[in-house]
Amino acid sequence: MEHLPAGPLTEAQVTAFWRDGYVLMDGAVSTGQLAALRGAVAGWVEESRDHDGPWGTTMDGRGRFDVQPGHSADRPALRRVASPQEVCDVHLRIMRDSALVDAAAQLVGPNLVVNNVKTNCKQPGAGTAVRFHQDFAYEAHSNDDLLAALLFVDDVTLDNGPLEVVPGSHRGPIFDHWQDGVFTGTIVDGDLADLAEPVVCHGPAGSACLMHTRLVHGSAPNLTDQPRTLAIFSYRSEDSRILHPNHLPSIYEGEVVRGVASGRVRASSYEMALGEKPTTASFFDQQAQGTTAP
Image 1 (tube, rainbow, N blue to C red):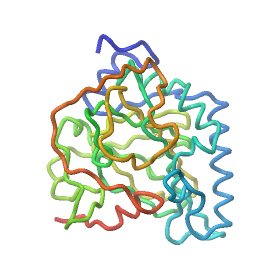
Image 2: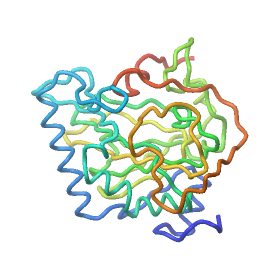
Image 3: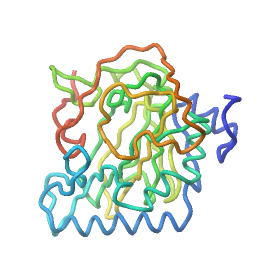
């Protein structure tokens, strides 16, 4: 790690990331950026009241804004915005230039490129849960120097659907995310049974969790009367090349945000079943097809 650039993370934080597969950081964005993000999300929630299903279009023709079952004008349930940096300036600015980017470069740089961006929302009382999975199962690359920087747009508490991670699981196997010939994007309970107990990641708005692509993680529903939103910026080492279509394609995919374009590719040794790109607005529909057993 001695070749990596200086940045906002301490040496202890960098060590923790590679040991545990994740690390929390404070002050990931400025107060102005955070306020603008919260305003953008609030605007989308209001806009969702005018729709009874996904709306907007991404570059591959799928819905940009996704709502969960039961969504209504009286009880809006926006749950996902795909590639928001294409329609929101503050997402684009944070993606390119923030302490979050500098931290990502410390971990998987020095040459760092954008993989994808999304915003995940859990509205008050919403049943949206994310079942345990590994991001890498959705996004195989030539090597696994990838991470997701999950920015807390709202305060994340123990009760509003916080991220749950399994420490050290990024150093274990890449689990099968298929069930009975269907890519559900989930890990069955039998595979989870031998892993360590999940740890809850919570903190104030403006902080973030940087998470390795192979870390097992999920989250529970939001049981409170307050929203819980994460703006998720995924980055990869510039020499890590994607092996199948990006499940969140964007005109900004592959943009170099730190360092330079080396023109090189680096391969690591692993074996896995390739994931399947969702045909609907988000991966929640894929996860809904799975069961927790055996």
